[in-house]
Length: 255
Picture (cartoon, rainbow, N blue to C red):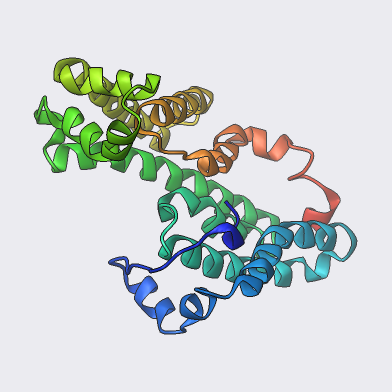
């Protein structure tokens, strides 16, 4: 949803220092019941990339400044959007980080930051598997059944006849089968560790992540669609990024 479509009555505080500092500005409170402010914020958020593109194309010397503005807008918008609450902030990480790559005026620094986004994405996904081991879920055959019951309790109660409710209820009643999904997800996430050592399998990592997104939405009903921009870092990895028409454009070389 757009920010103006939300109807929040409260907000919650995440356990991180940046959120605490951001909340001191009071921006999230001033927007809480300010629909016109939300519409303005939506307009700024969704037009900032277009503003950067136009500036980069016609006035490249200002593009770094617009990228900085876009970075500030994105961080403020995502913080407010996920504080109300409406969604997990993890799903919006590309919005928070990608503007960083477009700030430098040097092509090599741009490529370095773009590569850094790739390694962050690999760490982000691989660490999810590590967390399953640290928390001990991977050693508990009833883990996935419990997760499904907690995640979908409202749907199971309100729409028990719905096909997805029936499917989830069947998985809950068969913990060994639901655990196979949990184990498969962990193995798929662990596979991303290979990205730290070579870029030869980046195309396979793209396929793995898309498969994960589909299954995550089907079984967990978690839409991580906004993580898809990270796949660009895998697609343009290695020599591909240097051969790309965009990254080798005259504008980039002259910046």
